Image (cartoon, rainbow, N blue to C red):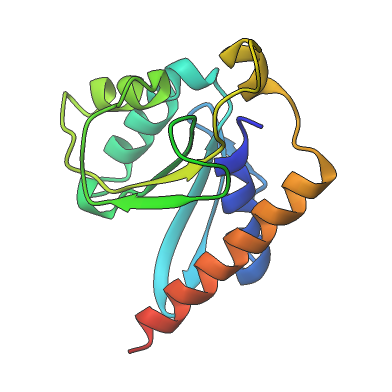
Length: 159
């Protein structure tokens, strides 16, 4: 389930015909366009807790302004399939975000899209919950949500 951000990247790549076959900076990535806007999509291949080891050097090497970096990640504190887009902020206890902030030299001034996965049921360990695969129903619901989000982005960008 921790790959909900990867699901979003794959959805964008598929919709825009962007190949994700390049590998560098401990990540698989692809370059392309959404409309006329150049984009760089990346899926760190590190452990989530140290994703900054991939994201930080990549952003630095390509001289990408932090205001143009969108970090997409799962959030236990949001109900399942709820999205929250924030222009900046802290790590909120998310170790992957903590790592990225550390590799951005402490800067929190970059947008992030939090995708809710909800809390584990009963007494299930949070780590086990995050690492479990989506059920078929959850996968379909998330893919539908991602397509709706992308469609709204496309509509808003053409205004």
